[in-house]
Length: 478
Image (cartoon, rainbow, N blue to C red; front, side, top):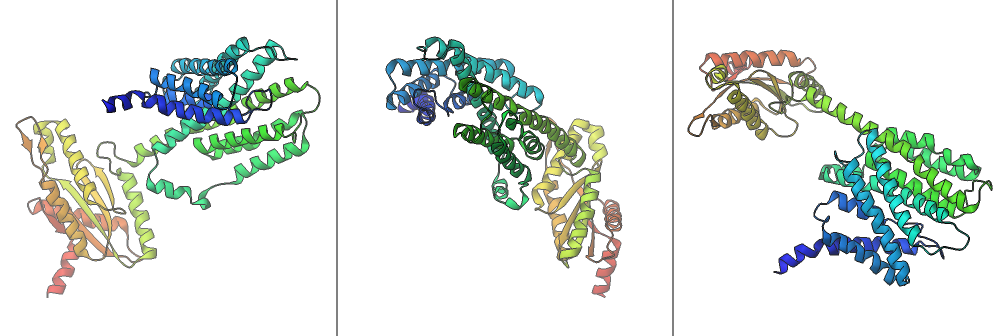
């Protein structure tokens, strides 16, 4: 019973708590008689309802409503004002939620220029709905018109949504992909290119010193440089910090745009201009994200064998040669090449079909990968043939690894149907040479290939050494 109650009302407590905290922060930012200068509650609520289906329930929406009202009550808003503001905020979130379901059916991230356009439409709809309800219910303020109140509210909401929603979406995606190794790299500041961000800070300072209507355009080149240099989350955070910083500078009176416009019109114009200014770098980073994804998929298709998930032939050859060159500079150990071939693979294909043959290749590749440790290179050279490049201290380490792989493959059972399973074996050729400047990878690979041929000739399902290794062993024995 208790667990059901907890499950039922958890969305209400979670959403209500977040909305309450964000709304209190916003209320603290009010100037006397004005709306909040900082209001993250609406954008956060919209993001939560779009992203987490378990919160998108009646309990979650009820919790949001209570969160808004409770924040206003704690901060001593009048009852009518409190209900009015909560209604306007919820209207904007609901409008944004419905529009997001229409425009963003293929995901929430910034991928491609159309994603920024749909984000703009969603944010505009949310801001418009919130401003409409707020303006219609508001008691007329002295010296203002309905239109002036609407456009002021609209420009504020649009700006907040445009800078906060990208951070929320990209942040969630980034955190979901991180491992302990990635977290360690975050604090490696040496690899961070700070020049674009530094140029943005300098451009804001120059804009502040110069002033005038054109000052808002000073940071554009630096913003575009940041968009070309950073991935999505860092760029979105930079845009957020830039937006908040410029808003703060203007509010403090350090940056003015001349006296060409009345105060209210100047604020609205500035907020709209700043909102549309951030669309440029967001569009660039959306395009760059799509391009990076395409390049990554292309590199993956070139580097990795799609069936067995080990290195492709060309990638294996290139990485092995690079690996050997690196090992020459830092150790006095040896390099061993293992060539593997699945025994009677053609018979498996001809008897049971290529689908079973593919399953066989996948199973063998997995068995090899499970045994290998970090730094050992495995690739598929073609057909049923695999190769490994490893650094070893002595030859016996390579022979031991080859035997371990052979025995592991020997235990594999590939199901043909509910009653039939097939066994398989592999033959392995081993070549080894101490690391010297005259070591040639291709020559060592040819020796391993000749040893594999010898293992096949000797009856299969065995490990054979290259002829040069056999000669060395014969010399030692004699």
